[in-house]
Length: 77
Image 1 (tube, helix red, strand yellow):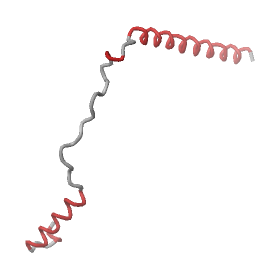
Image 2 (cartoon, helix red, strand yellow):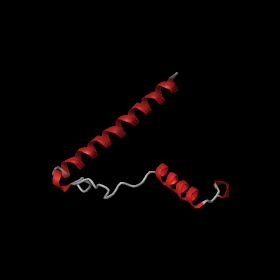
Image 3 (cartoon, rainbow, N blue to C red):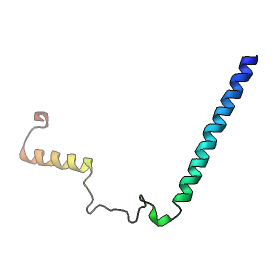
Image 4 (cartoon, helix red, strand yellow):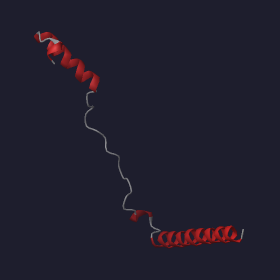
């Protein structure tokens, strides 16, 4: 019983130390980088595609029509 209590206490202490250190380090990092304009990964403008790409279904359908017009058998694919 004493070992279980000791193990549980050690686990709690380890978690407190770990998350306490992480909290302190995060606070220091936030304090150093307070300016929003210095954010290196800020998105200023979203990129938009110039043209709409043809869907796969349209592409396959147009290929089938071309082969059907030229007289190529579908089984020769």
